[in-house]
Length: 636
Image (cartoon, rainbow, N blue to C red; front, side, top):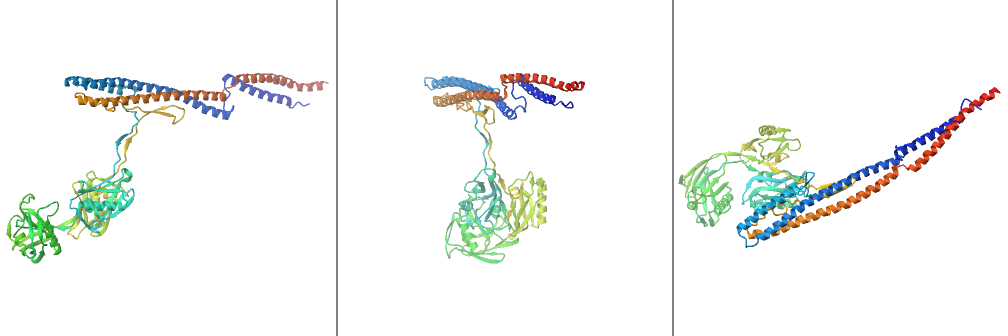
């Protein structure tokens, strides 16, 4: 027997605490009606229960959403029904107006009523709303609105190419380089003398052979300014840059260095044609700067009338000059400078170096046929055996762009900061500094960099376009080629491709479930008069009334079809509502089984624990008396 520790009391006390704790939880469950009052009651059950609760609350709101959707649909159907009656009345009126027993005045009265009906229909379409949502004006038709279509990139040249075309020379104007989507593509044209149509075919043929998705064309169809268009629309297919010696020659105003011509005009009327016969009038002799020259003209009858290009006689004389190694160009002109004037004379343009030059002492058996007299500089003729003089002035090579730079330009490193020029056969490169430039400061920056590069080129403006001019005159000084990422910014106008801008069509989406994407889409067509095809109905004539009948039939069918569609929406929503309600009921029942307490079971547990509590308290009282027995032993 011990007294220091009452182990029996301690044991009973622990049991009493356990019983009290269990009884406390049972009472909590009975008072709350819930089996799970905290996470410790059932951790997994609590997690499942909370998920179910979120679904249940979502389903409860979804039921209300569906009811609202049904109300919206009923509102729209009411509006459509209000439109059908006026349409039926309108059709009756058009049938009446189709009868020739009516005069035009009678039909005019009917038209007045029809106009009123149109206004009534438009009024209903605009005023049928649900919570400020306009239902019948097409706002929620679900059709995408194309604000702008995708556009293709276009390069627009500034050089006019006539129907006679031009000459393509190897290494001079035969290459194009395109930058598309970051990839460089090149074509090289075959050398030759092309008409405008032949040139276009050659360019497009080479583009096709290289699988370059670009088409060349002219601004006027068969001639005009050369254009390049990307075959695929959109920003990704844009022509980012174009360069090459042909780009400068065929897209820009390119002037070759040269000297002005020394012009001499004959004074023999050669209208409308000239016949050249070998040994009779096929030889022409003359002096240039005191040096005698001779040409022989091929036999034939040559028209002196220009027909789309040079006249036949001009071509024959030019061939003769070429065969003789002379740089002389022939023109056939009207005496008064008017091409409709029936009188024609020969005009020579003689290309020589800068300075004063002489021409005269015309002879040969073709003298009287072509140049019995000569004149310069105005219409003051002298005998062709005499001599006239003229001054040849040099001018520099130049390239003029077609990009409007009046608003200046922003230069960005790696984007549009490099310009390469092939000057006198040698490539020169400049790199512009980053910055936002006005037109004036941009010109200063370009010229500073040109000077630093030793390109021997000066930049200026021709109107609002950049012009690059060689600092020296003469045919030997050239600007042959251009390249670099700044070409499209400074010189060649390129319209970038753009993507389509589409405004997404709106519809009315109902949230008909507890989770994301549990949506129901409602699309209601536009039923205004313009949308159903009756805005332009006019029955003031019998023909107009006849045409109106078909239009109104179409409108009635369209509105009726829309009403049928609205009815199908309502049926679907009613089915959805029933499904949501059943789901809500079943899920609530499942959640109740997890969270709600079994009141009978918990009452039984509470009663049992109360008895155990009383027993433990009684035993604890008795065990506390056991140490007192030690005193009894001591008394004995």
